[in-house]
Image 1 (tube, rainbow, N blue to C red):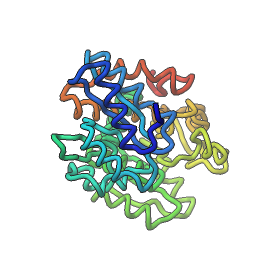
Image 2 (image 1 turned 45 degrees about the vertical axis):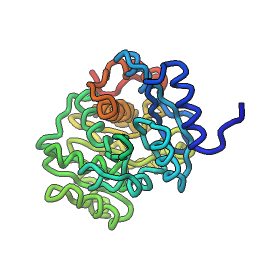
Image 3 (image 1 turned 45 degrees about the horizontal axis):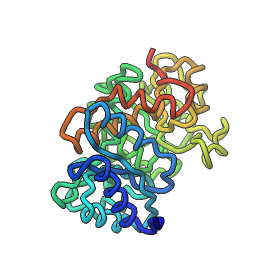
Image 4 (image 1 turned 120 degrees about the vertical axis):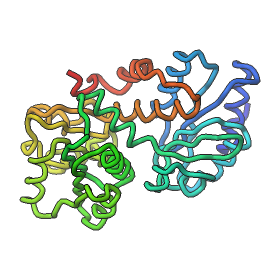
Length: 314
C-alpha cells in the first residue's frame, strides 16, 4: 500500500482504517503539529475512549507550518470529528476556522477544533487545563492570589488569561522583552502588570508571589535542554520559598531541573503533565458531549512522561 504523502491522504487512510475496525459509525479524531511523533495525545484519547466505551480512534498527523489549511480542508472532507492542535499551528489554525469561542478569539490561538456538520469551531483549552492542574496537583485555587507568569508566548497568554478569569488578585508578567510582556499582561485586564527589568523589581515580585509559573520552554527535553543550566533558569530558585506553588508547563523531563530546585527550596511544585491531561479532557468533552474520564487519562500517561509522579500532590 502506498505511503500517504499529504495530510488529506493520511486522514482518508486513517478514516478508512477506523471504519474497517469499528464499522461505518466509527469516529476519528487526531492531533496535528510538527514534530508530532512523540505526542501523548493519542494515548490520552484512547484511554478516554476505552473508559467511555466508544469506538473512536485518535491519530497523530504530521503537519508543518503553512499546511494547516490543507489539514482543515481534509478534516471537513473526510469527516474527522475533532483535532487537537499543537505547535507550530495554533495561530495559523486560529486564522482559518469558521468560528472562534470567546477565549480563542481573545487569545488569537486555537488548540482544539470541533467539526460540527462541516463547520469548524476553534477553541483553546490550555488555560482551563492549567487552572485545573493546580487544583489537582497542589490543591491551589487562584482566587484572590498573587501570580507571576514568566514568558510571553502562546502558552503564557493562555495561562495569564485563565488566571485573571479565575479570579487572581494580580497576574504579573516577566519577560526579557518588556513590550511583549505588556501585550500579555493586558489580557489580564486591571489585575495584569509588567515586572520591571531591574533585578530588584523582579526579586520583590517573586518574593510576594503565591504562584510562580514558567511558561517558557527552558529545560524541555531535547533542544531546549541545552539551555537548562542555572544561569538560564527563568527565576533563580534561591528566590523561591516555602508557601509558594511553582509550576512549569514543561513535562519532560519529570521533574525539570528548575522544578527540582524549587522543590528543594521548599516550594510545592506542579509540572506540565497536569495541564496536558486536563486540556485534553476539556477537548474530549467538547468532541464527545460526555464528561472525560480524567483518572483513566492520568493512568495512561504518568508512566509515559517520566519517572516522577505528579509534583505537589502530597
